[in-house]
Image 1 (cartoon, one colour):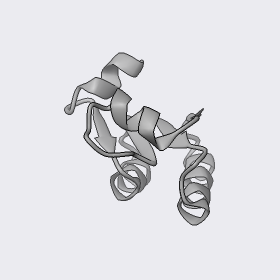
Image 2 (image 1 turned 135 degrees about the vertical axis):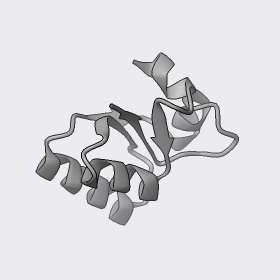
Image 3 (image 1 turned 90 degrees about the horizontal axis):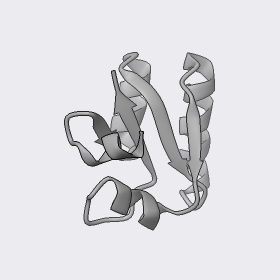
Image 4 (image 1 turned 30 degrees about the vertical axis):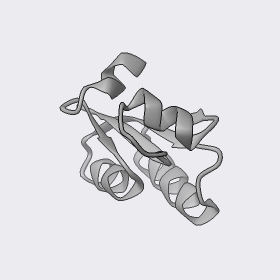
Length: 81
């Protein structure tokens, strides 16, 4: 599953894009970081619960950014259908 995070066509990165993918029913799993801004964390967590999208909590934004092969820390990412 974490391998799919490395492929740009299989995932979206960033809170705005993750929220859009979940709302549109395109996300199959969301990765959310413990050290993300609390407001953004709660937004993503709440929407995932509402839409019944599995949520995987990650330890750090730096770790998720590296997994997604992007050059910045990342608060959230989602795998797409």
